[in-house]
Length: 187
Image 1 (cartoon, rainbow, N blue to C red):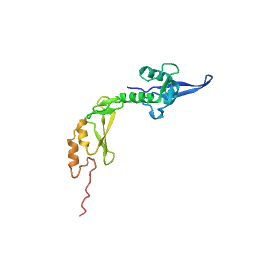
Image 2: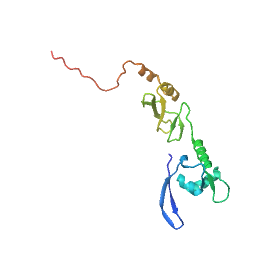
Image 3: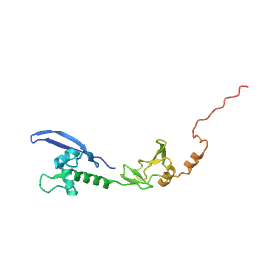
């Protein structure tokens, strides 16, 4: 089971003015739109801009974030920071194959349990395919076009013979416990 941690860091406003605590959570994606390309940023400015600790930015320098030079204060061009963060985010992506669905709890593409498929029509063009993860049992979802729905279900491992029979039926059979009682003849 994966747990999300929250960190508390002190915010310093000048040498003698100490404010309270600022709460922030661990992130894996940062807004690149806030970064201006032609501006140089110091370590502290990057930390404030992205809402991370300065120690995180120092770790980024060790991992591959390009500094202008090695003298202090470390300065980074906005284009280099944008490039670093966008490359970092694309490395974390894990694309799903045609027979897989993304499980958020396992944080990886998984195959779905073949007996747990459920299809919901979103609109005339798309449908939402839901099933249970074969590893942890959590609900996983995948959208599909309505025209290719049967092909998508086959690729995911669903038995589509029942779906074909129901879609070809002129009048579908209702599976209910409702029994119509006949009125007695009044003769």
